[in-house]
Length: 177
Ligand code: GDP
Image (tube, rainbow, N blue to C red; front, top):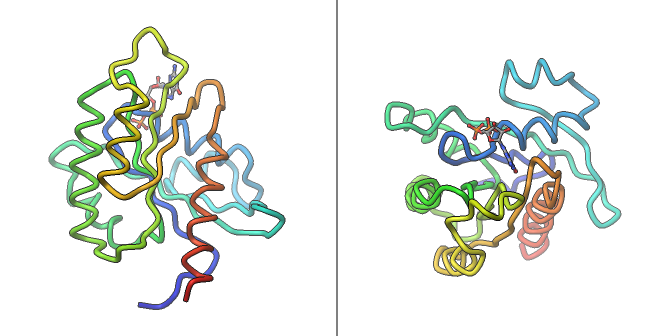
C-alpha cells in the first residue's frame, strides 16, 4: 500500500457515550477550513496543526455509534484510516471491553502491524466514578501493542497530546521506510 502522506486520516472509534463527539468538537473548534456545524454534519473535519515544529494536516473522522447494527459503518472506517484513536470511558467498564473488541476487529480489517493506534481512556476528570484504572488501561494497550493516554474532553486535558502522539507515530513509520 502507498505510504500515507499528510493529510493523515485519523478515525475515532469507541462505544457510544465515551466522548468521540466531544473530542471531535475540540478538534473542530480549532479548525479554520470549516466551521463546526459542517464538521458535525459530515462527521469529518480537516485541520492543520504543528507537531514538533513541523506542520501536519489531520482529517478527523468521527464514526457513528458502535452498537451492533452499526458495525458495518465501523468496518468501512477501519479500512480507510491511517491511524486510530480507540476511545473508552474510564467510568464505564463495558466501553473498555468494547474497545478491546474493536481493537481485534481493527486487526482483522487493518492488518498492517505498524498502523498507529492509541488507546484513549477518556473522562479522567470523573475520578469518583472510575471503573477502569490507568494501570489496567496501560496493560491492555501493551497487550494490544498500542500507545495509551488518559484524557478529559471536559477539562480539555491531553486531547492535543493524543493527536500529537498519532502524528509522531505516523512520522516514525514514514521515516523508517
Ligand atoms: P460519543 O457518543 O462517543 O460521541 O460521546 P459524546 O462526545 O457525545 O459524550 C457523551 C457524554 O459524555 C456527553 O454528555 C459529554 O458531555 C460527556 N463527556 C464527554 N467527554 C467527557 C469528559 O472527558 N468528561 C466528562 N465529565 N464528560 C464527558
